[in-house]
Length: 329
Ligand SMILES: [Zn+2]
Image (tube, rainbow, N blue to C red; front, side):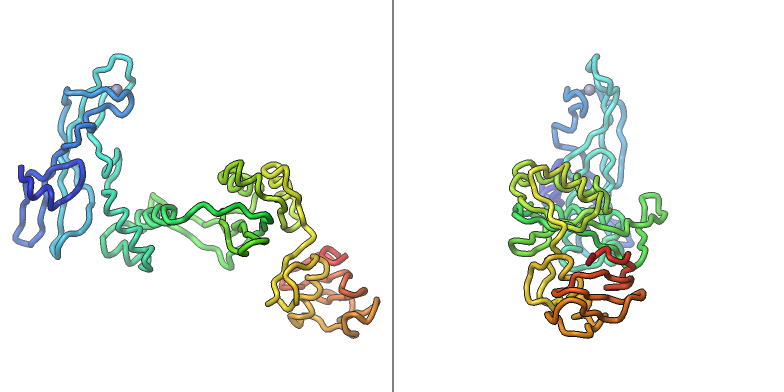
C-alpha cells in the first residue's frame, strides 16, 4: 500500500492501494477504507469483524491533473452481531462519503464555492461534471455556511415579494417543478434597513417558521412589527411574537420614493407616492385644504379630499387593482 500515493490523493478515511493508467490517459485510483470507525454499526455503534461481502463503488471526486481520474472504492459490508440491534448489515462509510453519497464531500464543497465565486450552476455542473441539482444543493450548503445569523431588530418589517414570471426547477427524478412565486422578506427598519432573511411562500406558517428558527432571545428583542394589514401575517406575528406591537399603519416609504421623510403614515404615503409618481395630479397643491381632488372618481384615479392626502383611492395605484377606499379611506 503506497503511503505516498495515499498522501497525494488526500481523501481522509481511505488509502490508495493501486493506480492504473489506460492508453487513453484515464487513470483509476483504487482505494480501501482505513477509518476504523467505518466498522461500527451506524445504529447501535458496536464494532463488527464479520464481513458479509465486499462491494466496489465509483464515487465522483475532484478532478486532478488534465486526464480524467476515476475512483474505485472497495468497501466491506458487515453483519451486525448485536442481538438487540434491528440493523442486520451495514456497509462501510466515511465522513467524506456518508451512506448513499455518490460524490465526495470535497467535490461538493468545491462545486459550492465555485458557484459562490461567481460561476453559474450550469457551467460548474458541466465542467466537473456533476448534475445541475447536485451543484445547486452544494451551492445552497456553501451559502448556508457563509451566512451569519442576523442581529434582532427593534423594528421588524415583513412584506411579500412576487416574482414576475413563473419559474421552474429540476427535480431529483429529472422532471420539472414549478417554484413558489411568492416569498416573504424580513427587514431591519429601525437600524441598517438591511434584509435579514427571506423564506418561500407568503403564508402565516412560513412567517412563524422563520421567526421560530431565530430563537426566543432574538424574538424577545423585537418591539414593533411593521407590515401590511394581512390577516395571515397578523396571526403569525401574534403567535410567534406575542410581546411585539403590530404596526400596520406605517408604510415606511423611503425618500427616493418622492417623500421627504423615511417614516410616513400609510394613508399619507400612498397618496403622496401616487402624486410623486405622476399617477395623478392634484387640482390644487397639497396643503390647500380639504376638497383637493385629482382625476375624478373613476377607476385608476386618485382623489385627495384632505391634506395631506386622506381620501379614497381608485383602482390601479402603483399598478395594483385596489378596492376603493382600501388604502386611504
Ligand atoms: Zn447494530
